[in-house]
Image 1 (cartoon, rainbow, N blue to C red):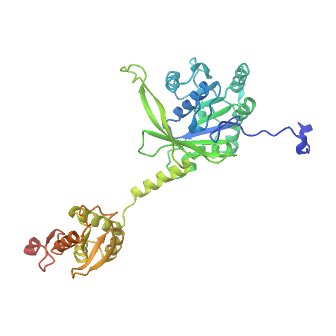
Image 2 (cartoon, rainbow, N blue to C red; image 1 turned 180 degrees about the vertical axis):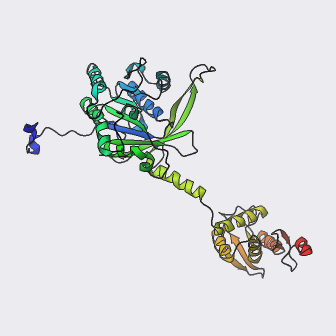
Image 3 (tube, rainbow, N blue to C red; image 1 turned 90 degrees about the vertical axis):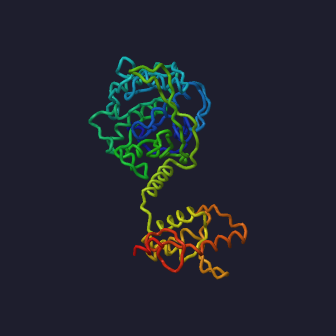
Amino acid sequence: MEETLKLRRTSELPPAKHPQWLGIGWIPKAEITVLVGPEGIGKSLLWVRVAAAVTTGRPLPEMRIPKRAPATVVVIVSEDGRGEVEERLKLAGADLENILWFGPEEDGTGAPTFARNQGGVPMQNLADGVRELEQAPALLVVDAWLDTVDGGIQVKDGQQARAALAPWKRFATNFGTAVMLLTHTNRIQGASTRDRMGATAVLRQKARMTLFADRPEEDFDNIYVGPDKANNTGISNAVKYTKNVVQVRPRTEEDQGTTAQLLYPSDVGQTIHAEIASWEEQQRQANKKPSKAEEVAEEIKRLMESRGINVMPVADLDRHLKAMGFGDTAIRNGKKIAGDSSLEDRAGGGWKFHADPSFVNSSISLTSNETNETNETELSLNAWCGNCGDAYHFEGSELCEKCETHK
């Protein structure tokens, strides 16, 4: 080791290695990719889709995986039984002969515990098995990675997280394999992917690539995934998938007989970080309490659309809004939201409020002066009671006949 610790010129060094990709901008070769997302969202379906492409050599355009010769995939699964995982792989079109299982259970599943730094006996056994293959696996998946971490390691601590990732980094480098580690986010929602990662956010700093998977709160049919962090490359746009549940075996009292797959990938046009931020903004706007001015605008919209009009006397509109309990400032600002302007009628009908056609969907056509004048004449005979707010035929009193009688 000491002999290598010396100054050397660039010309004296071996040729530099450039990054190689299983899928450019998504999954690097000889490096660790961490796939993070809420529990139960469908992260397993994502790696199954990738594994199906790798084992068959089919391209996966949305992740920029080109057509290649078929290759092997090593899977370490602890959350789902092999039967369920196999059904997903078969439905995705994977070549099961190119799927290699590594686990302590008889069916090839389970979570071996990999010690920090070197990985211990399980990592040695895994490496020995790979060396016996004619060709190293193109992809290794650990689902869920935290199940395989030594219980004494706290991954929220940067140094300990690095120690937990070290065996996988060494494996990836030695064999040129793309290593994908799956883990969960916390249950805290937020506009930032870092907020949602919670205790596992430190992995974002330590891994070469982080893929983040999520969905809007009430969207149970789709899943969105995209690079959240990528060294040496730009951040690709997120991809939206639709989850499709398929009956794959007869249903019984103890087995629904279904499994799921991801279909219809589409580019959402922005990064996963921007996509999640837009969900949070939409939710914030939906939960936002409208201002008084916005309430006034909505009342104007309701009133005028219910009558099929988009022009009415200002005095009548103000009288109605005041009867609804709105103050002068709210009425003034609300009319700015709902209307283009208040114009004086040259025919002597007083000031008229003109609603913005894009805000009020009027059923009245104002394509001719005759139609406009007819409706405005009718409107001048109507008013809204200053007490109950109902429309009535104005004859000098600010109250309708009913309220006038009982005042």
